[in-house]
Amino acid sequence: MLVVGLLAGCGPASASPEAALHSYAQALREGKVGQAYGLMSAEFRAKHSREEFAAMIRNNKAEAEQTAERLSVEEGSVAIRAELKYGYDETLQLRKEAGSWKIATNPLMFYSQATPRDTVRSFVRAYTLKRWDVMLRFVPAKYRENMTVAMVEKQFDGPRKDEMREMMETVRVNLNAPTSDTQSENQARLRYGETYEVELVREQGVWKIKRL
Image (cartoon, rainbow, N blue to C red; front, side, top):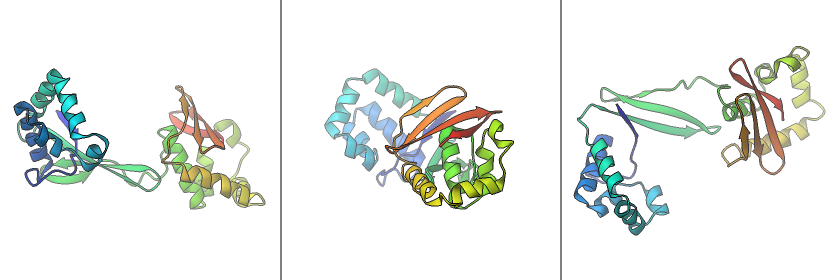
């Protein structure tokens, strides 16, 4: 089954994702570069001129023909999905099933630790909501055995709370910004802004914050 993303900014002839795919494949097959370019999103067209798009097709004819062939599928055999970005750099996947859009990811997974980035986002959310009990989940095992919820609260909302607030705000405003990442199977480092680097470790399949 071919899985494709939604094409945004399509014209009247592309009232549905399926129609957009059909029109795009047909334009590629018939060499109608302008029509194919018109089916690209406004964001794409802002980054790539019509001439650049035409050159990409002209210099990659075999690839364009293959793309057209792969997109020329029978109705109902294409899985269309959409992605919404919201909140703390979170994403929500939607999938079209039997003509209706359904949510494909769990929107109630508030504190995911599936990836290093997920973990930092979740940690910021817990801090913002003062969920000191949740923040304790992000502490590696060797430190957690001597730490309590009250200790977490004192660290982030005690005498040094202004310093902690500044640090967490720096991380928060840079959640969507590019960071310099280094990651291995069980270790990761994410840099936020010019000051703060978050060091993470994976334990039992979930990521924990070793140093902030």
